[in-house]
Image (cartoon, rainbow over the protein chains, first blue to last red):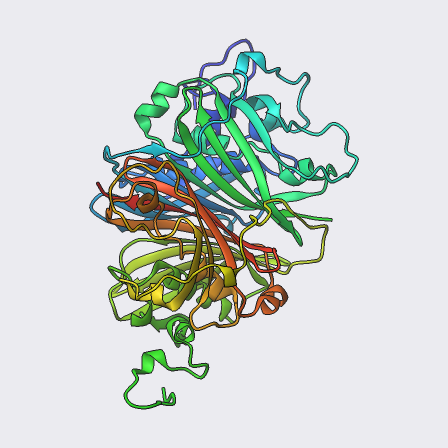
Length: 285
Length: 285
């Protein structure tokens, strides 16, 4: 709505005050009935419908913007019920239970009266306690020593991220041979860089391409059905991370009869584990 | 309801046709409005309220028993909003979206008109496809070579499981010293043995005591706030597993400012990975 336009025609969808495509993509308008309305973003388009990470970020954003919210996100689970159609959607976020310092949320995204996503989230006021990391950041070269792949990605959302693969990059030879491992390590940040927040961290938690393509390079159709994100961070640490890179590591644990899981961790450059995340993915053969 | 009584007074709650405490605990009665009613089980009592695993199993059972259910469980996320009071509860399970071979569920457990648990689940008709395990079962001694701890547990639900710890057993010396690791490996099954099904597997996924007690042995108050279970199995494989042991492995990834996560895997004795599971847990200091 009235964003500045530089050098010619730019659709309103990609212009906001900050000018970053991510902000435009997750923008929600409060409705009179307490729901929020949003719009899918072509900047984050996937093969069919939008990138799941951006849809998850939109769902969380309804909680982040909700007037009754207490505290910061600790966990989020999103269930992708159907591919979103390009166009508007509605998000309903409801605090199912509010305790003294914690809150449980139930979230639903719909299009044309059909549920396309269900989700739950947990927010809390956190206090300083004894803390201890256990899954240490792998020893890898710094981002500046790892190359950025050439060329433009086949799906648009991938162009919104700068990914420097340390290992387990996108397959080149789709020979279908079982590689025995599905591990990737990748330095990643928004492209162009954007200060990290809970919404963008949620989307970043979903940047790992489906592990089955790495384990057994065949371009089978896939679709995430459920994703969970645990946030081990807070606003102050996110601000300190800023536009720095995150090191992401992802690996599957099991592929069986149409579904596999993948589990991932994301550290900032200072070595703090910001997120652990898991998803279960459909695959067709 | 008319269960046989052997040798004196036995509360109705612990007697069913099968006679196993688990069946009594997860039993649900359909109500006229489509909801189910259940009752907490003293046999699965925890420090405060019931064992979270049994509550998760009760929530899933409403989906398993639902007349509209399509397929078998692939994923389940439960959010514990408040400790359940001993007594009756109501479960509402609603198919938010039904596709051709998949179904997304929204579940709510309430007591006295207050939400005590929210959950989502995904069920699917699975097909045979290329399959490949990736997280292999650790090499450990067979259950018969691993001792069962002596004595009765402090909380009742622990007595419902036979746990043979290979490593990372319940701490004995609560000295508060950071051990640097929170890994447990344990052979486990229902006590007395009971043929495995989706409901009991859900409860088994929550048998790992809080990792903070192992990482830094201090008996701080804790409470799981969200747990996700991915099922890599089906009814036929569960039947083949029967009353055999499962090898469970659990470890935390990060402890920070009041919340930590723990991630776990469970294999059957044949080495098949049946479940991967994750939870985020509150701790007080």
